[in-house]
Image 1 (cartoon, helix red, strand yellow):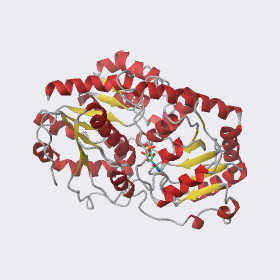
Image 2: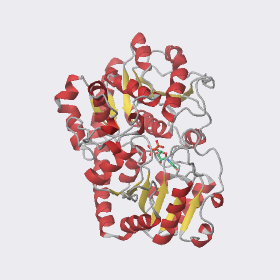
Image 3: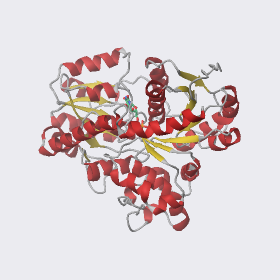
Length: 480
Ligand code: UDP
């Protein structure tokens, strides 16, 4: 490990994301923001995992500002602790636990930073930092309403005996829109498995944080934010101070790969708002049968599209979580026969990864079929792009319902009752609706309003999110 000596005059903050692009990307953006807008020196600790090609590519393609140092933690050997069957969150939590064994010595070597910022899954850091008298903040990488649910879960765990999915009524999270049990995240659908125990462990420790940064802003989630700030339930926990500082989204890469350049050049040739992007985040994969229906639905809709067509997986909806971008596939092996030929000129198929932000901000992009990961949602809304909500795993079903029912920027296709997959006719219907229908226009208008409000929230010196972050930084500077 090479440790760069921090400059003494500036506050020094350490940022530590857990593995996975959905954590890595927003914490890197947060780190950049601290350096560029607030003159902080940041050490960004990277947990090295089974090669995450996209994560490494992101680090090496982004222009990191001077004052942001990336430090790799020593890789942890977890081979004896996990098996093929180990689920994503359990695997992630074990990698983090093992990797953080070196955290104390790294923090000591770095001198005493003003603060450590972690995400939800590195809460072992609380004890380590308490010993070193370093305040630890959590950067919450999901929605505010999901934070409200997370803060409520330990109570629910104490008060409810059965499985939450068997509850007869939606779950009434204090001050928030009730959550339908079918929307509950995978990790809380079976309370006997390790995934649930890990999740509960980390969220139960949220109150140990010195503060919680929220990657959201008031206009997007007014009700949940008000609830967390004012409702007696959250005050009694007690909930640490919350700081809405978003939306912080990934900036388009400074350098693009050859495939990325091809994709953007293709978009340049299309007319405005005419292309649907289909991309299921860093980990998302469809079953073979569902990918076939999706391809047929797209073809029937006759709309223009960019399809990130990863190799299907019948075993897991998060099949590429740890190795996205790592394997090169041949889409002809798993798309319907003749699909590429029949859609030539109308659609572009990319095997693994698109420069998503650059595509969303391109004027030709009219809508986004998304798995509803929180970063993808923020990226879509901040570019004024309406969505087709296609949730797959984690808290994505809750996000999808919020986008459709509370925010009004998305439509969700419906599977035929009793069938697990969404059929091609339904896909054709929602694609046409979002691209050409009146509903699509209304969703686009709403997304554009939110886009403007996001710009306001982040505006230097006057925006609410800017102010919120500045207040914390002022404290750090006083202590430096
Ligand atoms: N992403 C991308 N290209 C892809 C797929 C994903 O650039 O082909 C980026 C996307 O822009 C977002 C992140 O990966 O910043 C995915 O985060 P999200 O929270 O949406 O989902 P997760 O991957 O955590 O499920």
